[in-house]
Amino acid sequence: MNEPLAALLELSHDLGREDRQLAILAEGNTSAKLSATEFAVKASGACLATLTASELTVCHREKVLALLDRKTVPDEAVQQGLLDARVDPTAKKPSLETMFHAWLLTLEGVNFVAHCHPLVVNQILCSPRARDFSEQRMFPDEIVCCGPTSVYVPYADPGLPLAWQIRERTKDYVKANGQVPRLIVLQNHGLIALGGSPGAVMACVLMATKAAAIFVGAAAMGGPNFLLPQHVDRITSRPDEAHRQRELRL
Ligand SMILES: [Zn+2]
Picture 1 (cartoon, rainbow, N blue to C red):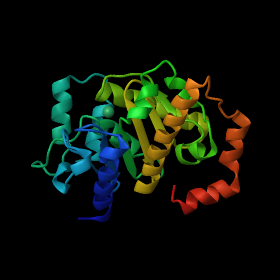
Picture 2: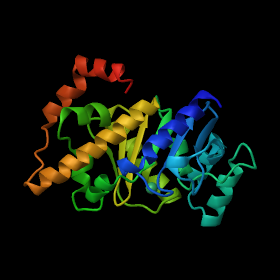
Picture 3: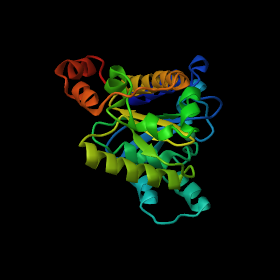
């Protein structure tokens, strides 16, 4: 098996670990860039914790991106489009969320993408404070691993409507911040972490999950107290934090 596929399996197993409560049953999906024209994504209905090589489906990037560029696509046409995007026509059907994976893997420096539904994060994303969790920061390591702010995506129907929303909101984020996000937050749904390595993606997921637990605890005591914008900017621009990001391969 080639290196990105082996790394993708390991990342999937890490995400699916029962003790971490990030995804159960067939929840969540992962992907990796294989070349400029192909990527691998979890097959529909597969379980992250026990994912095998045959449950990773290699897809033609341009065929999936072509689906995203259509204005309206009936459900059956989406299913057919996903089947037609497989490099090997005998491979399993790719996840319904393959469209957003394909697009996010086109962003500069993004080689791996992970989507999951962490229990503690969804406590907040299913509450009226979802946007606060996305747009505010509480402590320095949250900024280092998850970025100075996240992309906030209002609830959208899984599949193409969600992929369209993610594309629009992420484009806005890149324009406003001059950088690719590390974390995308989906209202009433879950999160997406993106990065150059499986380690960066996993660090983002775990730190976002820790931040969510801190948020919930602080909210119970009248908080959280969020960091001021100048404090967030300072962490983002500190040379020692940039060095730490490189050391951690974030
Ligand atoms: Zn999901």
